[in-house]
Image 1 (cartoon, rainbow, N blue to C red):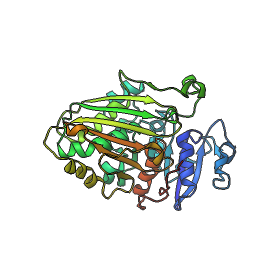
Image 2 (cartoon, one colour; image 1 turned 120 degrees about the vertical axis):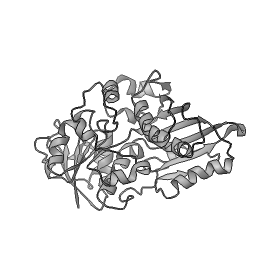
Image 3 (cartoon, one colour; image 1 turned 120 degrees about the horizontal axis):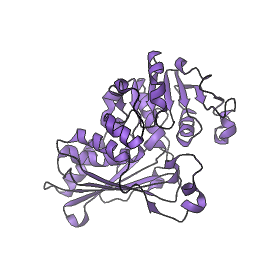
Image 4 (cartoon, helix red, strand yellow; image 1 turned 60 degrees about the vertical axis):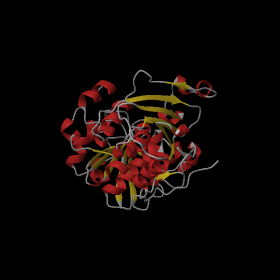
Length: 345
């Protein structure tokens, strides 16, 4: 059994990890930390886990994280890198759901996250945790930086086109929407029901921290300079993410070949569903699952390809992806504990 610790178990990604581990056959929950809720049973805060998770929260000082095999950080940025040296020295593997180990460009990290990076030596060995594009590095890693939710959709949507060299990499456009759970479990005015319901808005238009992460990773797929225009939006739903991606074709390619690029790229991927050409995937078809669905369009058979990508931002966009990485790191079947059918309606 893999002894698992979760730092920051009270937020949405933390409880999503707990939900997934509640029926993971190869995991034993060793510790779930929360300084404020020290001693409180997890199921008291989250009754959905009654009868499935019998552990109590413990303060970080009591948690004995160095006795775990792997520790997940479902915490604000900066926490994982502060604790990483001690855990790695004890032989513990780390999967960080925040941004501490996502980007290799330290200057870009410090600019966008307003934090000095405290362990750049460890950053160099961290594997980026997007399994479909970085599987072998993750398999061998001690540290994994889990991707952002938006970057997951953008990378998997653009990757087949960039690898094939059929689009202009310098003019990529991503128009993305997320449910309010993507902002985390916190008391914030803009996330109140009366503020977010019956409303739709863009944010981060002049620049968003997921842009440099996405550009850094997309740049590994092409020799061209990558230019990305990314606009995120908040939509009045709890879970779900829909990204509409646009790229200008730079080579003559017919629609069948365009579709084949995606089908060939993801034919062996258990969590990427390439739908028939011209389909319209819906966010609810991925709710509470680790599945990501993709559909390719070419309006008027013109020179623009449109890729639609949907996922659950808390599962494939966060905690499910982290469990997928853990399975690889410990030699398990990648799908273990993750074959949930989406919840509908």
